[in-house]
Amino acid sequence: MTANTPRAKAPIHIVGGGLAGSEAAWQAAQAGVPVVLHEMRPHRGTEAHRTDGLAELVCSNSFRSDDAETSAIGLLHAEMRRLGSLIMTCADAHQVPAGGALAVDREGFSAAVTAALAAHPLIEVRREEITGLPPVDWESVILATGPLTSPPLAEAIKALTGEADLAFFDAIAPIVHRDSIDMDVAWFQSRYDKAGPGGSGADYINCPLDRDQYEAFIDGLLAGDKTPFKDWEAATPYFDGCLPIEVMAERGRQTLRHGPMKPFGLTNPHNPTVKAYAIVQLRQDNKLGTLFNMVGFQTKLKHAEQIRLFRTIPGLEGAEFARLGGLHRNTFLNSPKLLDGVLRLKVDPRLRFAGQITGCEGYVESAAIGGLAGRFAAAERLGDAAAPPPPPTTAHGALLNHITGGHIETIDAGPRSFQPMNVNFGLFPPLAGPTRNEQGERLRGPAKSIAKKRALCGRALSDFDGWRAGAFKAAAE
Image 1 (spheres, one colour):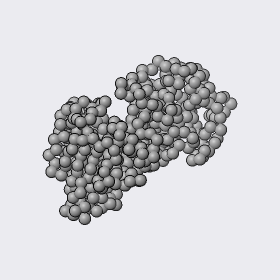
Image 2 (cartoon, rainbow, N blue to C red):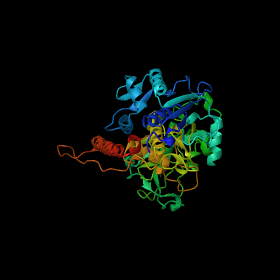
Image 3 (cartoon, helix red, strand yellow):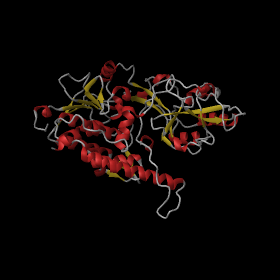
Image 4 (spheres, rainbow, N blue to C red):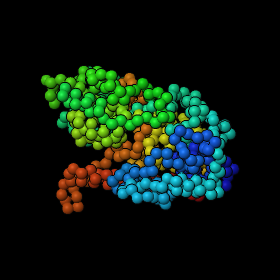
């Protein structure tokens, strides 16, 4: 099917003019499919936005590292540029000095995105709020409404999916790269060796603390700098009843020791005759087994404070974090349960989701998923419904895999385990990096880590180019 057929002429409707919606609109239109982009501002504002510009940056003006050789986010930048990303084109055109990072003049950037979309012959921008589920005669829809989805639309999505909550304080626990944990100190064991419905009986990594270490940890926790709530966050309930660890500690110095840090039912094989006073547990967070989350360690501590404090925990002295803890209002789907591999809602496949509402974190990640949603929708419109997703070895594919099923379900009773995530190398399939440099010398420490990242990035770009050359053929014909 080509772009001249009646079906292809029916527009894709995109709800939300943030980074994800803007990129989705651009990619679909560039494929030759008409788009109607619905943006509720200025008719209805949000607590965070200040203008009516499309792709407004509401927080930082940084797109983070632009290093495509050793950085996962820089790699994502490179892949997006290869797809002709509008977001990356405008970011590059409005770059401001930021060392190795890509930072932008936020007003110039938003104005450039707005102008490009307004000038595209296949894109119509409608300034209106969609207050419920899109009309049934909209055959193809992308919902890219972000973490500040309007309440009526959020309620409609909840009713359709049967999910109890969409907006809440998602109390996020830090996630640690498995290979940065010192297993000469830590060990694998489930409490009382219970396997649980999805476990083996040795499903947690355990880090032991003696009494002095525990008391010092509590002191640091109580004294640490915390990030304050924004005014518009104050009335939102905690997600699944989770409390930040510092709030628990404020209720009593022993609270954590009888909560997420309880030592009971565990024996340290490195020192079996000595019982730990407290234990920090980490649970596998993705199917690859490369990431482990710190169980019950949701926190509002500032990031630098988290790194300093959590590296005082035995076994985590050299911990590298894929994500640090946080606590903020968010709106996102339980995507692995609700979405298929090309971001369609399983109960209503005419609806796709994109951006932060799918469970990705960050400007660039949101735009990248928006771009994929736009391309998937366009391919479907052009008769190529089986257009393949990018390989999981690529930054796009690793992020998509996280959203649509790369995490694991909790291995015991507790809240759902899926949480928003930035792109990071822990989401990629493992790759054995080089062990020696060009001179034949054995790589160690940072040099070995950098070599491994370079290998991951090299594989990703090679696989991405192969996917790009073979995908979406219908749109090009």
